[in-house]
Amino acid sequence: LLMTVPLLHVDYALLQGDPELESNVVAKVREGVAVTIGPPLLPVSVSVALGPGNAGSAVVRATITPPRRYSVNLLRGHIMAVAGYIRSNVADNLNDLAAIGRVLAGGRVECSDAGFSVTLLEPV
Image (cartoon, rainbow, N blue to C red; front, side, top):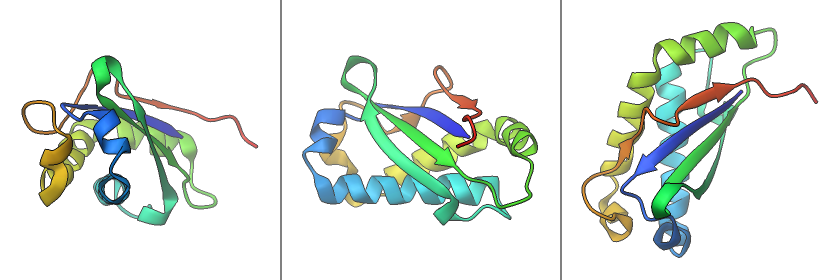
């Protein structure tokens, strides 16, 4: 599954220029996604890539690999059902980072509903 989450108020260029903070952001996103989705998903099941979003903001692209024999469609439905909690927990995790202020372009980190999506990836 590929989950896309726009991060509002995060300047992607500044974040990209701070590798330590970028690594911490990836870890906090991974943790927020896995903990919110819950068992049997673990943080190691979530791969996170950051990229540029609209107007200089950032976007998360999280690849979620369910455990073997776990229904991808069931997991997608569950993610959609808890999407608001995922966005809230990821934003809270990022706002808890002491250094996040270095890359903010006004306000606190917010995870936008607009642009949030979960799509099935083609089997490899």
